[in-house]
Amino acid sequence: MTEKNFHIETERLILRRYIVSDLEDLYLYLSDPEVVRFEPYRPMSREETAEELKRRIASPEMIAVEHKETGRLIGNVYLGERDFQAKELGFVFNREFWGKDFASESCRAVVSRAFSEGVHRIFAECDPENENSWRLLEALGFRREGHLRQNVYFWTDETGAPLWKDTYIYARLNK
Image (cartoon, rainbow, N blue to C red; front, side, top):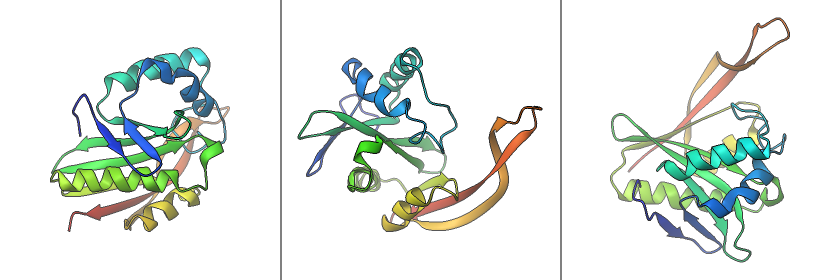
C-alpha cells in the first residue's frame, strides 16, 4: 500500500494520499480537543497542522479519507509498516462524521486491501478509555490480545511526573 497513486473507493468514500488542499479540513479535526483526546499529541494550531500535512503528504503510511458527496477530507487511516509481514492500523476522524460508520467503512477497505496484498497480521493499539475505538476494532473482527498496564505516557503533570496510560492491543490475522 505504499504506491504513490494509492486509491480505494468505497460506497461513500475515496481513500487516497494527502494533498496540499487538505489543509483546512485537516485543521478542522486536528485542532479539536475531543478528536485528539486519545492521541499522543495536543490540538494543533493552523501552523502546526501545515507542518503535519507536509509530513502526511510525504508518508506512504497515512491515508486520507475523503467524503465522496462533499469532497471534504473527513479523517484518516494510518497503516504503518511493521516487521514480520505485519501492519499497524490507526484512525482519526472529524467529530462531525462520528457515528456514521465512515471509520468502519474506510478501515474495512484498507484492511481488506492489505490482506489481499499478502499482509499476515494487522494490529492496533488503543486506550482502554476509548471505547468507540476498541468497539470498532472488535466490529472489524479484531481480537483483544492484551492489556498492557501503565506502559506508556504522552504527558507529564506539573511536577514532571509521567501520567501513565494503559494500552489495549488488538489484532487480526489474514485467514
